Image (cartoon, rainbow, N blue to C red; front, side, top):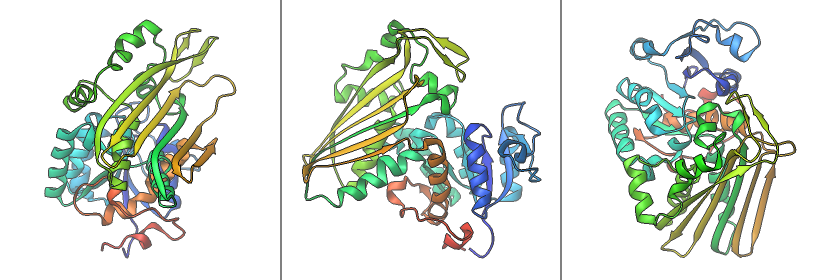
Length: 360
């Protein structure tokens, strides 16, 4: 591309602090920013990311469609909620105006096995609009591309087991509530844990109807199966509460989580495949107690058995950096809803981003 990539930031909360700074530092021109929060609307984006005014003011999200029609940006970076249903409206608006879009929304990484109807609808809109929709972030690399790459060094694999933890305080109130943080154990059992004993077919039906929101590993196992050429034949999930022996303050929830109540949850997704490889992946999201930190541990069972551990990953920053580095592949991808397992892998961007975009 012989000019700067032109981007719009949609959602100017915690994640955008890094997203917008990374965009600017990679030579991207931010031409607009939008939010629904009256406390943010009217601010220069420099007030959000620091470093002085940038000449771009956050506007009311209601006007984003009109802005797209006038300005025709290359990409919209969406950092709002956690489900595809949550971002359907903004993704639809992007698609109708032919604007490529990529989101930090966790489900958006691989929504084909959790929200197939919405994803198909968005796919059709994007194809009609001649643009690409996708999701990216920390899981894209550290639960996906990294695992696929390491699998390529193995002679035989019988099972892949992954465990990753993160502090829900870092991602906003919607995510914290979705993990059951602040619930009593009885409330957790009734609202989240009551699906633990369902069969693969039962839980699949509920997920696809939108009656049950699965954990992030549900989508991640789908991503891995697609990327590695595996055929899933069953998939189940079990969610259990995480607790702490003392009261914990949650600034995100604005409450004190009482000792013994749920600080979050552990969700384990088990996928059996026709090729005989089992995926057992666990994500642990909770309000951290003193001494807890982010971890990412993966073990490949087979020949040779191999384990990789990443301690204290900067999960928020890596989410934002990986997404920003995905933008050239997003712009170059075929129109439609194209999950990142179908895109070329990221490279480290040392030149302005437009040098990595092949499309004119």
